[in-house]
Structure formats: structure tokens, C-alpha cells
Length: 118
Image 1 (cartoon, rainbow, N blue to C red):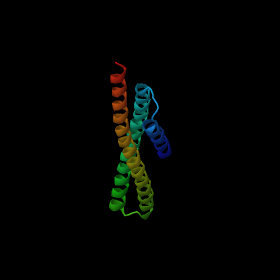
Image 2: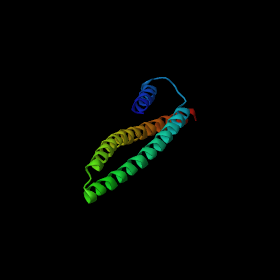
Image 3: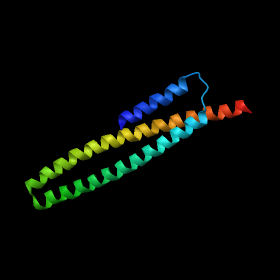
Image 4: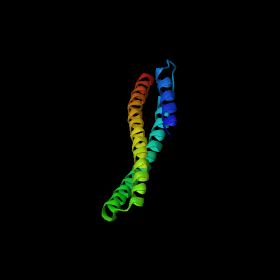
């Protein structure tokens, strides 16, 4: 997913940096759809991260209540997975935030293009 975010950013930045005349409204709409896909992806990962956090809390509570060493292995595994989910969610969140900035730039370009065509 991170590669997808980076490739799309490179593509949009290359369009913004080029001196060519583009249809900025179409590019803005395309980028908006990509943002919507990423927002859905971010929501799904946030829900999964929250559930793993809940499972981690429940497992840790069971370890503390019943003092079973086998459950400690479960806590460790869920904890490691939770850390990776948090890192991934962090990267998704930052990617979407950067895409919002790109969207604002595309909106300015589209507005300028509309004013020039009047």
C-alpha cells in the first residue's frame, strides 16, 4: 500500500511540476477518487487496529487474572501484530494527509484554468 501511495504522489507531483497544459479538473477528480479509496483503506485498518488493541487488552487481563504462561505467548503475538498495524496505520494517515495538500494544489490549478478560459 505504501508503494501505491508513493507512486501516486510521484505521478501527481510530476503533473503539477510540468509546464504542460492539463485538464486540471479531470486530474483533481481522479485524485479525489484515489483519496476516497485511501480513506476507506484507512478506516478498515483503523478498525482492525482497534480490535487487535481490544484483543491485546483482553489477553493481557487474562494473563494477569489467571497467571497462565501460555497466554503470555498470545499477548506477545497480538502485541507484535498490533505494533505493525499501528505503524502501517501511521503511514496511511500521513500519506492521506499529504494527498490532501496535493488536492488543494490541484484545486488551485483547476480554478486558475477556469479563470483563464473565461
